[in-house]
Image 1: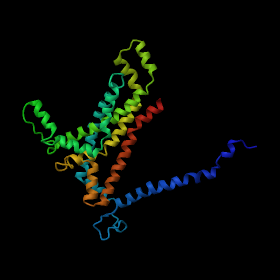
Image 2: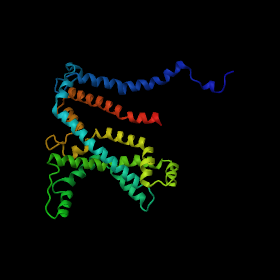
Image 3: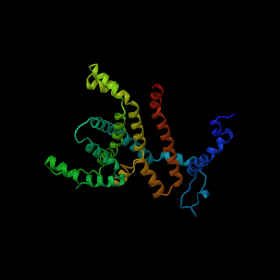
Image 4: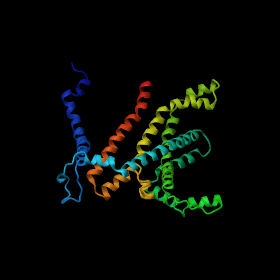
Length: 302
């Protein structure tokens, strides 16, 4: 006689029917658009054609991909974005982790300082870019404060010099995204088991030794997750360079997303832009794959 659970057991032949609606939606929202992007990336489609229909564009094969890897502006934008990521992500991690560790203790005003530390992440990036633009223009508050501190007139051309413009954008990005690391590491610190830490203190370990030998090993996975997520997100930077410098002076602060924006919306090179997007997409997949390798190794080991 069948048991109670047998009445609710789904036959094998019906399990495929249950996942079929989800599979259909995934095909239409992911696979089919991705295939269209590949196809359009191998055409010379542009609205400048008569009618502008994508299916009437000429199929030119991988020619757009060749043009993309030979485009100095595109390659420089990639290098510039990687530079911003390489400087901002470690800085944000160090600041965010330090802030989380300091605020993990109990002291008067902890809630207030925690709230202040999180506020920058709540600001809309476009609004933050405009605020930092006003701060770093030659007649803005930054040069004004430097003039007061140094005792003479300071007019650093933050928005008109390639070096200083990059510095201003990086400072804005660090200000915005340090709270992201702070939140992840705060949650990780609050979730640490107190027993190993208390045992280390009982055995006579110093705070520094306990932090280095007990706390840090337990935070290895959250730290890797925070760095990986922030590194992937940093490759999408658009708002601050666009609002603060428009990619200038010249193309000195143009990032990947800004280059794709101009190629697609300004110059209407849809086929080339799709090819460039695919190159970035495939590169990000490989970067993410190798980035999570240590995380998978740590998960298998622990």
